[in-house]
Image (cartoon, rainbow, N blue to C red; front, side):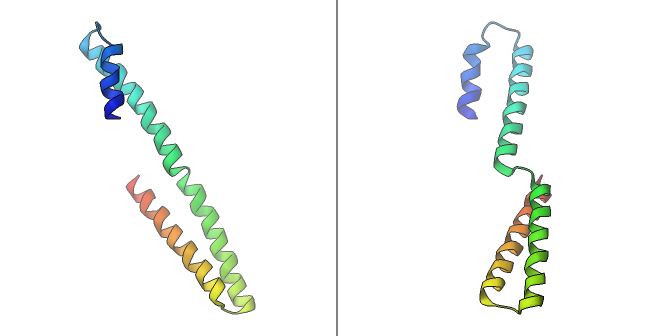
Length: 91
């Protein structure tokens, strides 16, 4: 971002400073939105998918009994859910 910001100085040369600043901020906003979408995706949708997966695992545990494999899978989903909750809180 730092390099991009500095690179826009030459492109915007000769314009009103306030107008240049506004254009740069507008462009920056678009870049941040794109980065957010690429980096975090749709956190709520992913949480819903993980919760469904958790219910399936728990149902399997009830039906088949607890196995090491199911326990590991459950722990993995729990960790991912916690990670998504933290990301949601940050956002």
